Image 1 (cartoon, rainbow, N blue to C red):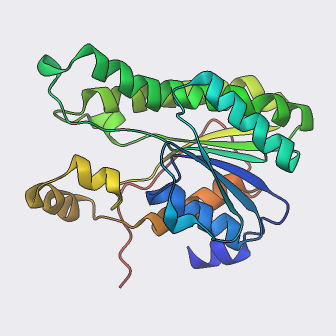
Image 2: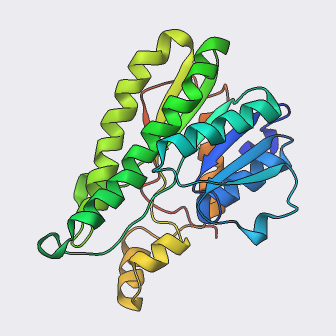
Length: 245
C-alpha cells in the first residue's frame, strides 16, 4: 500500500468524498491532500480532526437531500473549476430485525446509502462527461452477497449499488468516465463499532476476516481514482485484512 500512496500524484485533482468526516473517507481525504490534491468532504457532521489538514475542505450536506447534493457540487465547481473524482462512501447501518423494522428506518437507510449515491453521481456527471474524464468509486459490502441478521436494509442497499454502478459504467464509458465498485472489507471505523457493539461480534470478524484500519483501504481507492485503473464496471474486494507483520 505504501508504494501506491507514495507514487500517487494528486496535484490539480479535485476529489469529492461523501461520508468523509471519519473512517475510510477521512483517511482517503488526508491521503489526497498529502498527495497535492484537493479533497472535499461531504458529510452531515463536521470533523474537527480534519480542520487544518492540508488540501481538505468540508461541506455540511445530507446526501439523501438531492437539492443539497447538487448545490454542494455546484459550490465545489465554482471554487475549483472541476471535479475529477467521486468516492461515494456515505452510509448508515442500523441493527434491526426485519419484523421489527419501522418503515421510516427502511426508507432512511435507502435514502442515505442508495439515493445519496445516485444524487452524487447525477451531480458530478455533467462536468465529467463534458471534460471526458473522471473516476467514480462506489462502496459496497460483502454483506450484499452473504447478508446478515439485523442488517437487511444495509445489505439490500449495498447489493443495489453494485447493479447501479455497473449499469452507470455502461452508460458513461464512451465519455471516458470510469465507475467502479469497492468492497472495503471489515474495517475498524465508527460505523463498524456501532454495528458490532459487543466484544463477541468483533472477535468473530477478527477471527474470520481480520479487521483492517481505514488507512488500509486508501491504496485500493487511490488506484481506482488514478489513470492506472484502466477498467470500469468492475468490483474490487478486500475480502480479508492483510496482516502487517
